Image (tube, rainbow over all chains, first blue to last red; front, side, top):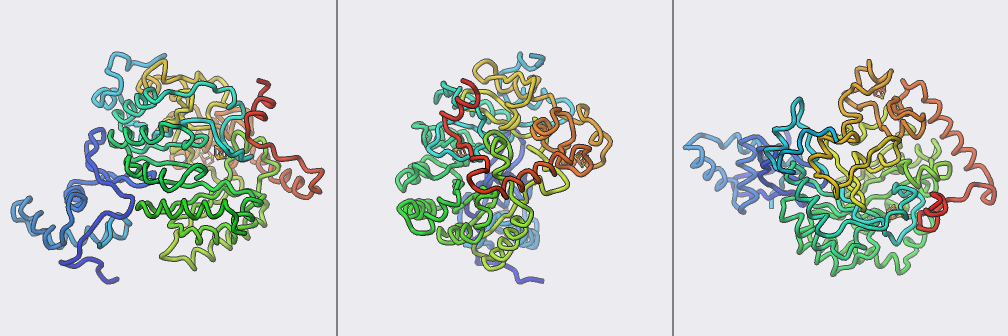
Length: 94
Length: 394
Ligand code: SF4
Ligand code: SF4
């Protein structure tokens, strides 16, 4: 296993040139980047939306999501997603 | 027009999704060729030979209307190209409005006419991405590397691009005359602190097709260039990403051209002609619908041009019964037409095509030309209005 990139104190930000937005014609959240677009599923959209809107630590992000999803235990999923998103070049730690 | 969409509000989202029956086809990519004006004269330009014929470009308002319609149909990527888009005085305004509509805006420029203040202005207007294409001939390259004013200008521009928070994305169009200088090209990229470098190969349309015998690289050149590119890829790991594309003439499968005809890609030319790909104007029997005469929605869903090669019905053998057709859509229609005379044929690049020999012959012809002494070889024809008029008999 490679080492984790994100810990509770890291601040994830969108990678250079990436933009998050809601796409009415696709009826989903998307990530736009030079000459491309990824459609995001619900969970990925919720996480990236928050990352794009304000700078906060992973711990704060998880806390916010936990409230939004009524106390669900999301920590592991969020970390896993962040690592995947990093490997896809979508985000980086600030 | 055979379109059934006329009664829907042009560009309304509901209209667009509701009117697609079997498959959702959206023009996700809008390429706006804003102008044919260009300070350069690249002999490998893919603009049509008769570009000098186009006198009236769409106005600012007409372009914005096209943007609005395409955006409502689901377009997210907007490419601003040309010609040289920087020659349009309204470029900043177009960017600003497009960005407001929610487009991801890509500027595709030669960098000629770009300076620090222009980059800052574009940034402020919300431009998302700049791709600088270096149309460097070997001579230019040598000058550049020798440290001329032009080189200083390029460095300054590259710095401005980075200072404004853009990644430096460079694209070099390679061909027989410059591919032997892969080292120099990549050193130049390193000097410019590029983040991404695309080593694109010339696509043989328009002027490039006319000059093909002089531009097609030789096999041994490619092998060497590839080795150099790979060496730099290793050395630059983590600093600069290098993409190297093999020219399709040297592949045995065609490219999945435009990701399928009329599938995700919409080009609008300077005069408002809508095309499924930027080379499609040269195909026979095109109706060449214009955005000034009908809505983008009608053109996309209803025009003969956009429906011509959708799906698989139009295919000839061997594509028709080939199990790879969903992967490459039978290749490029324009290439099939230019080389075989029939746009429904298999792209002759494919080794399954009975016409593959045409590609091999073109390669052999290129080699023959390359062996001639300079004064006997066919001269390169440069893309400029004079040659355009001459060749197209305007
Ligand atoms: S390829 Fe060269 S001549 Fe053609 S539009 Fe681009 S910069 Fe101008
Ligand atoms: S025969 Fe046609 S579909 Fe099959 S691989 Fe060749 S080009 Fe593609």
